[in-house]
Image 1 (cartoon, helix red, strand yellow):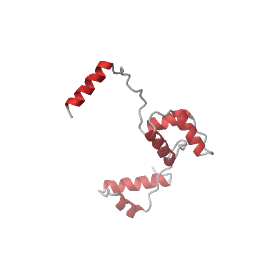
Image 2 (tube, rainbow, N blue to C red):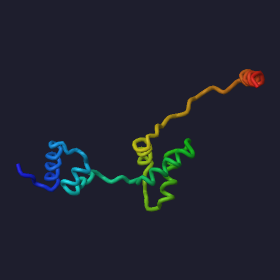
Image 3 (cartoon, rainbow, N blue to C red):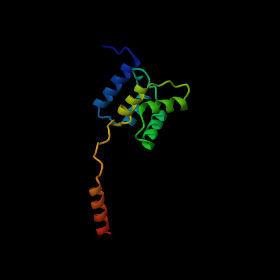
Length: 125
């Protein structure tokens, strides 16, 4: 079966070199010339790495902020960008690995607890 495209020809050449124990990418490029990457399928991402870093900084500076507020700040900073709140949420989860969680609900200290803590601190100075 004859190769039908340039990429298939390169794939067969690389496969042949691999079978002959030439496995370093630098050596394969020397033998075959430039090995071009295939174009990435799918829609390009709306948020560039710079904009994703900005979202990360926003969240790091104020971790109690909402995704709606972050969306507003991002759209104000980049007027040509029209990003939705859902896109920001998806980016925070999938690209920046942030986990959404609520803070623990803990009971407030009673007067007796406050006095006991103060007494313990005074005893351990």
